[in-house]
Figure 1 (cartoon, rainbow, N blue to C red):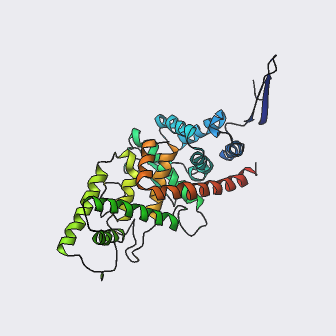
Figure 2: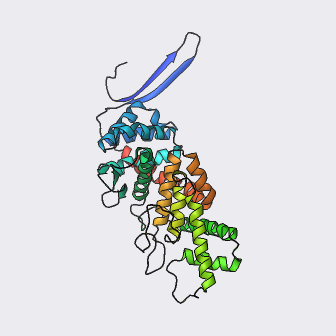
Figure 3: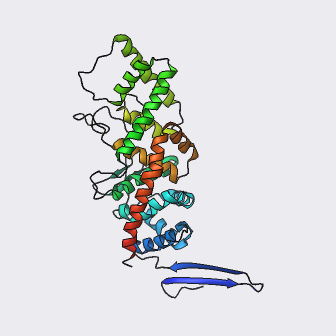
Length: 334
């Protein structure tokens, strides 16, 4: 078959014994603007079909990834992940791709991969390990989708809802309580120590710990660190980061988001969390979901169950709905 123009084509095949098969698909210009590909992606999503089944759309996405400086060795890996990703997380990625790829995903020669709010661009390190690239790429993509969904909102990221921070605090408190029980700390003392860990900039007038209580405090920190360090790194990045995040890294998990100051996790003046706890947790949650990493998903849900439920039941559906509305308006122009 040879295409003679752009539009929608329907092919129907009938056999002599009466069997019928038909398929509708779009014929689009492979060199057309990304907006046209989005219009097609939206029509497939609305029809309940997998956009990754559309060869032309996959080719456009492949070309966009290459133009955005994604190593060619990783393009097929990323596309394969999208092909098998759960619908909600795949849709969030596809429907938001144009927003944060229009500036091009830049490569940095050294340092770590990151997402820039000011430039609305992904920066992927050239030194990123091949085995880690896919997870990091979708982690940073999650930040981009999170930010673009929250444009116009008071918060920087959509994930930074109070319900998310409450869930994180409850999950980490439960984890700390389990570790305190494991080393035999008395209930009242355990509560005091856990409260201190979860409020790193508490009022200086609070009751000071005795020497024996201080020893118990350090013991709790050490046992938590030991328990986290033996967890497989790739499978527990969200867990490790959040135990450190909610305690301002008093519990050092060895994760890259390390800061013992107020610059990232907590505001030293107010003592309140900055919200980056929720943003980083969402990025790791999204990365595990879209890559269908069962080991990571199991670790996340096992230790941070409340947080995972908020992301699955509140944040992810909200972000997808926001993008559907935005892309619908975009598609209507074509």
